Structures are given as C-alpha cells and as structure tokens.
Length: 310
Image (cartoon, rainbow, N blue to C red; front, side, top):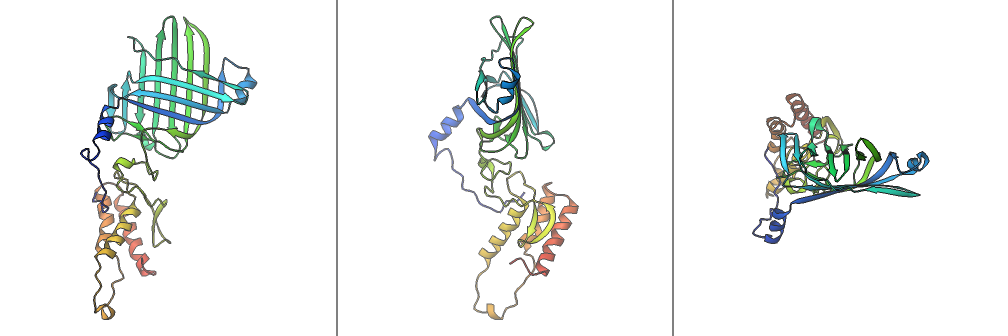
C-alpha cells in the first residue's frame, strides 16, 4: 500500500551500541500479572483455594530455539522455554512453582505463537524429568481484544502494556505414576511485561508502525459525523483507513499556495484526487473488498455534498 506519512528511521550507524545489544540478545522474558477467576491446588483447602485472587507468571524463552513449524499465522519452537514460574496468591498466602525445564531426550519443551483466525494465542507445553521427579506444565494465553503477539521479527514477541488477555496455567509434579502436587489457575491479565511496544494498540508494533498514533474509530467517519459504516481496518503498516484519508487532507493543505486572485477564483468543494484514490489503493492491497470500496467512495462524496469535509 502507498504510505502517505514519513517516518524518521534511525540506522545502526547512528546507534551502534543499541544495535549490538539487540543482535546479541538471546532471551526474552514475559511476565503476566492478573486476576484469578478460578484456582485449584493440592496445597490448600477448598476454601483457601477459592480465596486466591492474583497471579504472576514468568516465562523466559531462548530466541535461538529450533523452529519446527511455520506458516503465515503460526510459529512453533522446540527447546525454547528455559524457565516457567507460576505465582498464585490471596489474602492468606500463596504458592509458587519454579521447576527448571530440562532438554533431555524424550522431554517435551514447546512454545507456539499463533494468530490463526485473527485471534492471538500463546501456548506452552512442558514435560520433563529432574532426577526421580517428573514435571508437566501448561500455559495458554488467549487474546481478549488487543492483539499481543508479533510475528514480524526474527523471533516472535509479546506486547508490553496494560491490557487484558485470558490466561490458563497448570503445573504438576509426579513421582513415578503418583502425582505429588498440582497447581492450576485461570484468569485475565491486568498488565504484561513483554518485548514489543505498540503505542496506539492497533496490533502493529511501534518498530514497523508507520502511523504510531492511529485514528481508531470503529468505522470510517468523514468530517467527524458522516459514518460510512465501513470498519476502520488497520493495514499491515499500522495505518487505519481514516489515517489515509487524514493524510490526504494534510497533504492538500500543504500543497495549496495562496494566490492574489484567490478571492475571485471558484473554490472546489469535492474530494481531492488523493481522497478518491484511497479506496482503490485499499482494495489493491486487500484491506477492503469492492463493496466496501464503493461504500467509502459514496460516503466520501455524500459528506462533501452534505456540508463538506472542511
């Protein structure tokens, strides 16, 4: 898609230390903090389990892990998780689990980053042994409203910020066939410490977002009141449909040169060439379909006829 905004890009030549550190980084740490809606464990009575209301989950991932599956919406890595700690607490105490995953033959150590069907989901599956003990752990983090997984870099990442995702986790210890303890919880996050940043929460991280302060109305609205009814989609560059129309207005204002004959010249009150081309460009890039394009063009002209954009 043609992008209408300019973005200042800093090269590695300008920031050599930052670039070296980024290139050498081999671990990512995610910390999920939130509210428990359900909790169960073998450590407490049912009443004590029911009183648990907060969780903190820490996940450390090796970014040089083996990629075992990839498609445009999913990446799966093995031998990636080097630490998964669970912390569950309430007014009367808490419990923390922190067995360190091993990479022995026969162990399971898998993490999946998925955006399938427009829903982001992070899953972890661990099954490993330490001496005579066996540990089985699971984690599922699922998008509630805000996309939180980035698949644009050399290794996936998780969005940093205060947002809600649903979380389900479980950790068990076995000796032989006998389970010696178990912890399991479900809830939702209130904050996430991740490795990616998205200032406008449009699902496109700041490092590749050409519109870091997007206009995020639910539908495309002209002149602040004329609602087209077309969803205000975000394209791959992080720009909403309304961002593209807004930039057309800015460019038109910058290109207009005052004339000493302006007071006698007729004023054109219809859409600019740039505005007319936005819908066609969005169709070409697969952001909208032909029906939505027609609706946008009709709404654009109607907005001018009903009082103008300016």
